[in-house]
Image (cartoon, rainbow, N blue to C red; front, side):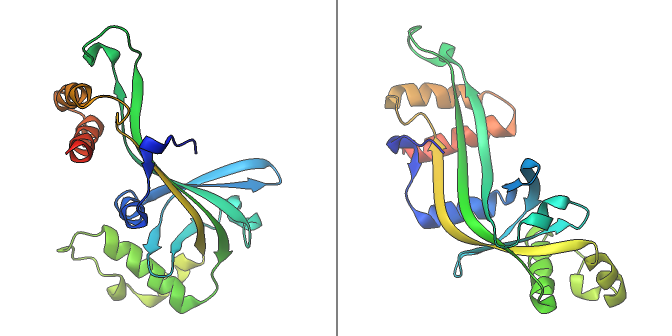
Length: 202
């Protein structure tokens, strides 16, 4: 990923937090048929620097992946930035966005206890705290039948890079103009970028 120095995320913990907050990621890999990609929720283990997830068994991407290096892309908020928001007409539009890229080796999981733990962790992450759904309360035979349709994996994180393009290459005054315009939009992406820009600016 091309990252000018003023857009670079340098703090590892900041990137870990980003991955946890935007955990529906894209896994890109090489196959005998060319490049392939899948979109999957992933669970991060910060201490061990590992990502966990699972493919549908019918998804052929996993068949050539054991022991292979993959690229994982975590997508954050993004928004178009109009040059009409600036104090001058001598400017061009751009796009503000945030992303984290991971390079790592993917390994398929065979340990049933670890697979169960990964599934429980994913459900716990996404279910509301007051949800009545409990993985442990689902019939074991039903879970076992469903597990036959998935292929669990882990990705050992070997390289991590993050980019937060938030108009840092513009003056504080221009950044504030952009923030105000974004706040006038009613879409969640623009509002999220405005919030990030304000936090970064302050």
